[in-house]
Image 1 (tube, helix red, strand yellow):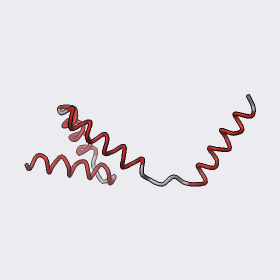
Image 2 (cartoon, rainbow, N blue to C red):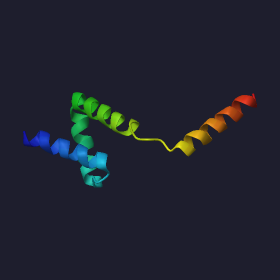
Image 3 (cartoon, rainbow, N blue to C red):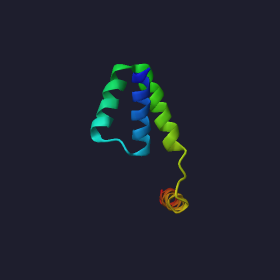
Image 4 (cartoon, rainbow, N blue to C red):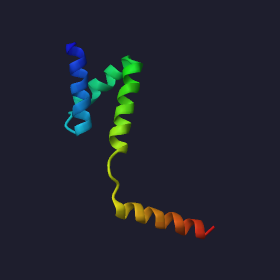
Amino acid sequence: MQQQEHVWHLVGSCLSGDASEEATKELQEILDADPLLKNTVELLFHFFYSGREENPAEIEDAWKRHFNRMHSI
């Protein structure tokens, strides 16, 4: 049980941006040894980062660039 708690502590540290280089490397080694856990953690990271709000100005700029490219074809 302590190993599981340690893994999730490492995951939490990585998600919050507080993980040291050693902790990040340790988590990667643990995940490389356990494909199912690696898949679970990758999904967690995907959902965590995909839920962040985008900057509306960046979205508008990207749309304008795309629109301009489409009209230049």
